[in-house]
Image 1 (cartoon, helix red, strand yellow):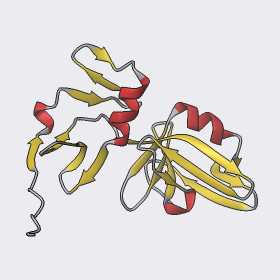
Image 2 (cartoon, helix red, strand yellow):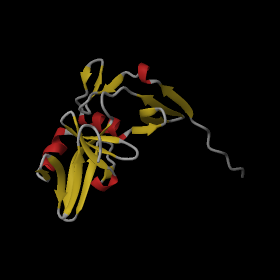
Image 3 (cartoon, rainbow, N blue to C red):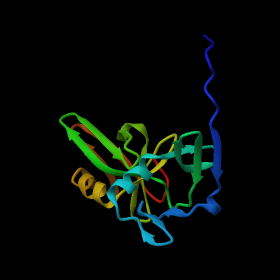
Image 4 (cartoon, rainbow, N blue to C red):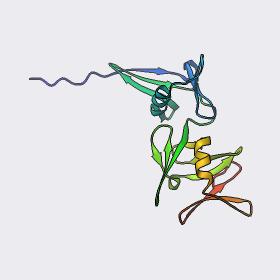
Length: 162
Protein backbone atom coordinates (compact mmCIF):
# COMPACT_ATOMS: atom_id res chain seq x y z
CA UNK A 1 0.00 0.00 0.00
CA UNK A 2 1.39 3.37 -1.05
CA UNK A 3 1.49 6.19 1.43
CA UNK A 4 0.07 9.36 0.00
CA UNK A 5 1.68 12.65 0.81
CA UNK A 6 -0.55 15.22 2.42
CA UNK A 7 -1.95 17.62 -0.14
CA UNK A 8 -0.50 21.12 0.21
CA UNK A 9 -3.08 23.66 1.34
CA UNK A 10 -3.80 26.62 -0.89
CA UNK A 11 -2.47 29.78 0.79
CA UNK A 12 -4.70 32.84 0.61
CA UNK A 13 -3.11 36.09 1.77
CA UNK A 14 -5.23 39.21 2.22
CA UNK A 15 -3.20 42.43 2.53
CA UNK A 16 -3.92 44.92 5.30
CA UNK A 17 -5.56 47.36 2.86
CA UNK A 18 -8.14 44.75 1.84
CA UNK A 19 -9.04 43.43 5.30
CA UNK A 20 -12.71 43.87 6.18
CA UNK A 21 -11.99 44.15 9.91
CA UNK A 22 -9.65 46.17 12.10
CA UNK A 23 -8.56 46.52 15.73
CA UNK A 24 -8.74 49.83 17.56
CA UNK A 25 -6.27 51.19 20.13
CA UNK A 26 -8.16 49.42 22.94
CA UNK A 27 -8.02 45.98 21.33
CA UNK A 28 -11.64 46.07 20.15
CA UNK A 29 -12.46 44.47 16.80
CA UNK A 30 -14.57 46.38 14.25
CA UNK A 31 -15.94 45.82 10.77
CA UNK A 32 -18.14 47.92 8.47
CA UNK A 33 -21.12 47.28 10.75
CA UNK A 34 -19.36 48.49 13.89
CA UNK A 35 -17.85 46.92 16.98
CA UNK A 36 -17.80 43.13 17.30
CA UNK A 37 -20.24 42.17 20.05
CA UNK A 38 -20.35 38.36 20.24
CA UNK A 39 -17.81 37.05 22.82
CA UNK A 40 -17.14 33.80 20.91
CA UNK A 41 -16.27 35.69 17.72
CA UNK A 42 -14.03 38.09 19.63
CA UNK A 43 -12.23 35.15 21.32
CA UNK A 44 -11.86 33.40 17.97
CA UNK A 45 -10.31 36.46 16.29
CA UNK A 46 -7.99 37.12 19.25
CA UNK A 47 -6.82 33.50 19.41
CA UNK A 48 -6.08 33.55 15.66
CA UNK A 49 -3.64 36.50 15.86
CA UNK A 50 -0.16 35.60 14.61
CA UNK A 51 2.85 37.64 13.58
CA UNK A 52 5.48 37.27 10.90
CA UNK A 53 7.97 39.57 9.16
CA UNK A 54 5.05 41.39 7.48
CA UNK A 55 3.16 42.13 10.69
CA UNK A 56 0.11 40.87 12.52
CA UNK A 57 -2.51 38.75 10.82
CA UNK A 58 -5.47 36.55 11.62
CA UNK A 59 -4.73 32.93 10.69
CA UNK A 60 -7.28 30.31 9.77
CA UNK A 61 -7.09 26.87 8.22
CA UNK A 62 -10.20 25.41 6.65
CA UNK A 63 -10.43 22.33 4.48
CA UNK A 64 -7.84 22.73 1.78
CA UNK A 65 -7.08 26.42 2.43
CA UNK A 66 -4.88 28.37 4.78
CA UNK A 67 -5.76 32.04 5.17
CA UNK A 68 -3.66 34.92 6.44
CA UNK A 69 -5.51 38.21 6.75
CA UNK A 70 -3.22 41.08 7.71
CA UNK A 71 -5.34 43.63 9.56
CA UNK A 72 -4.97 47.27 10.51
CA UNK A 73 -4.52 48.04 14.19
CA UNK A 74 -4.13 51.44 15.84
CA UNK A 75 -1.47 50.77 18.46
CA UNK A 76 -0.65 47.12 18.95
CA UNK A 77 -2.48 43.86 18.35
CA UNK A 78 -1.41 42.22 21.60
CA UNK A 79 -2.98 43.13 24.95
CA UNK A 80 -2.75 41.96 28.55
CA UNK A 81 -6.39 41.21 29.35
CA UNK A 82 -6.05 39.55 32.76
CA UNK A 83 -3.58 38.74 35.52
CA UNK A 84 -3.30 35.54 37.51
CA UNK A 85 -1.68 35.88 40.91
CA UNK A 86 -1.25 32.49 42.57
CA UNK A 87 1.07 32.93 45.51
CA UNK A 88 4.55 33.41 44.04
CA UNK A 89 3.37 32.71 40.50
CA UNK A 90 2.15 35.66 38.49
CA UNK A 91 1.15 35.47 34.86
CA UNK A 92 -0.18 37.90 32.35
CA UNK A 93 -2.98 36.53 30.17
CA UNK A 94 -2.93 37.95 26.65
CA UNK A 95 -5.85 38.50 24.29
CA UNK A 96 -4.39 35.67 22.17
CA UNK A 97 -4.83 33.29 25.17
CA UNK A 98 -1.03 33.06 25.44
CA UNK A 99 0.57 33.72 28.80
CA UNK A 100 3.70 35.65 29.71
CA UNK A 101 5.30 37.18 32.78
CA UNK A 102 6.72 40.57 33.64
CA UNK A 103 10.17 38.94 33.47
CA UNK A 104 9.76 38.45 29.71
CA UNK A 105 10.16 42.12 28.85
CA UNK A 106 10.51 45.70 30.00
CA UNK A 107 7.68 47.86 31.30
CA UNK A 108 7.17 51.42 30.14
CA UNK A 109 4.54 54.14 30.11
CA UNK A 110 3.65 56.03 26.95
CA UNK A 111 0.72 58.45 26.61
CA UNK A 112 -0.56 57.36 30.03
CA UNK A 113 -0.72 53.71 28.94
CA UNK A 114 1.27 50.83 30.41
CA UNK A 115 3.15 48.52 28.03
CA UNK A 116 5.42 45.49 28.25
CA UNK A 117 8.01 45.34 25.47
CA UNK A 118 9.14 41.77 24.79
CA UNK A 119 11.48 40.61 22.04
CA UNK A 120 8.43 39.67 19.94
CA UNK A 121 5.68 42.12 20.86
CA UNK A 122 4.73 45.52 22.19
CA UNK A 123 2.00 44.50 24.64
CA UNK A 124 -0.49 47.02 25.98
CA UNK A 125 -2.32 46.56 29.27
CA UNK A 126 -6.09 46.69 28.77
CA UNK A 127 -8.11 48.86 31.16
CA UNK A 128 -9.18 45.76 33.10
CA UNK A 129 -5.59 44.51 33.47
CA UNK A 130 -4.37 47.98 34.39
CA UNK A 131 -6.88 48.18 37.23
CA UNK A 132 -5.72 44.78 38.53
CA UNK A 133 -2.00 45.56 38.36
CA UNK A 134 -2.39 49.09 39.75
CA UNK A 135 -2.54 47.75 43.30
CA UNK A 136 1.07 46.58 42.83
CA UNK A 137 2.31 49.95 41.50
CA UNK A 138 4.60 52.10 43.61
CA UNK A 139 5.97 55.58 43.06
CA UNK A 140 9.10 57.02 44.59
CA UNK A 141 10.63 60.35 43.56
CA UNK A 142 8.61 60.34 40.34
CA UNK A 143 9.82 56.87 39.37
CA UNK A 144 7.28 54.09 39.00
CA UNK A 145 7.68 50.39 39.59
CA UNK A 146 5.54 47.33 40.07
CA UNK A 147 6.26 45.32 43.18
CA UNK A 148 4.91 41.80 43.46
CA UNK A 149 5.96 39.86 46.54
CA UNK A 150 9.67 40.72 46.88
CA UNK A 151 10.34 41.37 43.17
CA UNK A 152 10.38 44.90 41.75
CA UNK A 153 9.87 45.68 38.07
CA UNK A 154 10.91 49.21 37.08
CA UNK A 155 8.61 51.12 34.75
CA UNK A 156 10.24 53.41 32.19
CA UNK A 157 8.61 56.54 30.84
CA UNK A 158 8.39 58.65 27.71
CA UNK A 159 8.08 55.56 25.56
CA UNK A 160 11.48 54.25 26.54
CA UNK A 161 11.78 51.01 28.43
CA UNK A 162 14.43 51.03 31.14
